[in-house]
Length: 111
Ligand SMILES: [Zn+2]
Image (cartoon, rainbow, N blue to C red; front, side):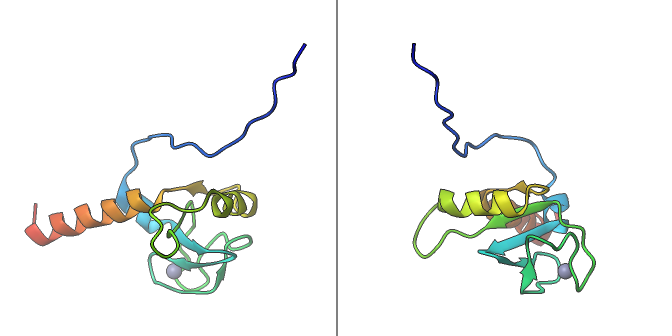
């Protein structure tokens, strides 16, 4: 009899989110420190800060930029974020970035 091994990995689950809501409650992680997407405050401890020390934004989402020329964030970085911020929903950088572009274009065109 073979036992099934626990094979955990990160998978993308598609959910519909209001990108304005995401941006209003987002911390952008860079390893152990993060920056607030609202006021751009930097050097925020992603593990302990539940709100932005500067603008008091409540963090509900976290994202990380891919390194260098990589298209996707290293799963090891996602694993570290998961351990440090179990209370936050991880948003893929490309989805966040794309959402911002759409919003900006829409605002620009006054749609
Ligand atoms: Zn802030």
